[in-house]
Image (tube, rainbow over all chains, first blue to last red; front, side, top):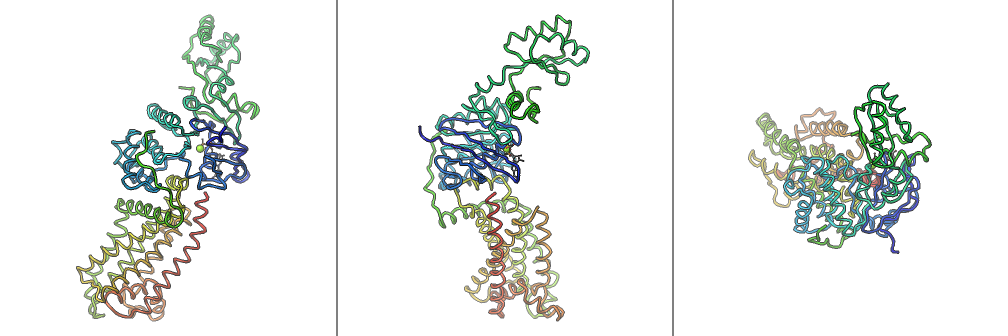
Length: 322
Length: 269
Ligand SMILES: Nc1ncnc2c1ncn2[C@@H]1O[C@H](COP(=O)(O)OP(=O)(O)OP(=O)(O)O)[C@@H](O)[C@H]1O
Ligand SMILES: [Mg+2]
């Protein structure tokens, strides 16, 4: 088999005594999307920065399109487009001027750069805002412009650092569509995210890192199987009622109490009616009942249990409380 | 993704590539400058105001004591002031630039990292020269003239360019050294103000107390004013021109050493 577009082998990077990336290996093949999933401070951006030559790894190798980041950074830069975690467009320039500026730097002719800018503005739904300073753009528009700026001259590899953080559902969907299109056209895409849902929607494979180490790797399906199914959250404000409910739900495995919520793991959707019947049987009325698919919180909790002992991750996306 | 309308030409490397990239980045520097009313005011509007206010206040006085029009000395001084006032604004802009996402994007692109530095300096030089030409043209109204011929006029702007090179070199060092932007103004404002006020541009040398006269005469703004007066109105030329070249080139070279070391750290990340 030909060499994968991105090939990372035992990558390490420390800041002072602290290892931000500690022995990370994985690869991304052309035409596929790999999601790099991890909580704040996991080392996602550090991995990306090593891949895009913004940081020099302490040890290990990373090869992109056959170019080694340490020995051939120029070759890497010519093969990789990157959209960083924080917007990298000039706020004083208009969207169009930003794209023309980057295009000209990459040796497009004046007319070529203008044509390409118009094409990208159109593709990312920014035609109308094209002549407005990027500083006046909304967060979602800026993110789209940022991605467009990475695509001015097509590269075989695209690296995206939390591309949809802070976007509303519609903008997120639009960005996902764009990423899927690019992968279909043969790009190798590595994207970091904190949302399982996003990795699920886009990535063929997911690499989960925490504290600089790979703690799990596989298809979304495989990972979710490891984590288990959905949970049912039963909210009961009255402490006495809640205690009685805990008793009524004793037949269910692994019920946990979190504030005024009882979290009941479910093995199938039919368990919902069983839960409701058990509460009815005890003449209890819940203030709220909600069913949630496994959230990143659950994934992490499950995945990091072995690796951190019983302590669990210091991590809360605020998801799963909606 | 749709088909690209235009494939990029092969990336030229080396000096040709660096020059092409620096020009594009200089274009951005100039565009941002023209869009910033505050910068326009600080580096162009305000010095111009100074020109006319000082002329209105002191023209008759200076004319009576020196027997020459004040604008002959004042216009060159104002041109040097516009170059000086470019230091602070340029340093702050560059300070922000090299910490911005755009800088990181450029670092990850297949271009010469030095183009970010040279582009900034080239942009500064063009703007300093452009403003110098404008000020010289406007000072024509109150009587500023190039009386020494075409060659001398060209020499006049070459000296302004050297002075500008010194200014942008200082700006770059300030941007690379300052922990945060307000520090830059503190570093830059007082020394440049002192140098302009204590120069032979505002007051003729004879008006200074004899104790500091030689210091005033030797400092770069004085030598530059004398040289520029010599190249426009006429007067002693050789010594002030040589002194000005020595000052500006010397300081620029010094700055270059510091810049190369510090900028490398910034690019390395
Ligand atoms: N330049 C730096 N100097 C010192 N420490 C750093 C530096 N960059 C990152 N770190 C540390 O390395 C670790 C990994 O950081 P990194 O930015 O890679 O995490 P991340 O997964 O991208 O997090 P987030 O989701 O918050 O963006 C963190 O503990 C961080 O504090
Ligand atoms: Mg990050």
